[in-house]
Image (tube, rainbow, N blue to C red; front, top):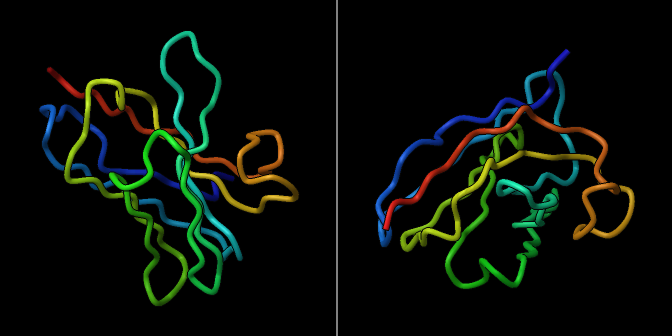
Amino acid sequence: QVQLVESGGGLVQAGGSLRLSCIASVRTFNTMGWFRQAPGEGREFVAAISWGGSRTYGDSVKDRFTISRDSGKDTVYLESNSVKPEDTAVYYCAADPSGSYYQASCWHTWGRGTQVTVSA
């Protein structure tokens, strides 16, 4: 059963805005986050948010992306007002980490991903 469902991907112009959503459909999780994977690359950590609202960002998106969470704690958002062509990737929602946020192998629950394409 898919526990995380992403939405909001699509085609965006460089410098434009992006808003991705991820709903935890079965239960809530203490920590949720986002990774992305470009063609031919491994999964890159984007951002994470804890139950208490503490945020962690990957170096490539720091100061450009914002992660947030709704009051019911079952939906997490990823937003940007200044996307770049290098942000093009499949974006994955993840939850339930057991170690370093930066390592995809430490996250145990994944969504199926949503494609984001940024045109120059």
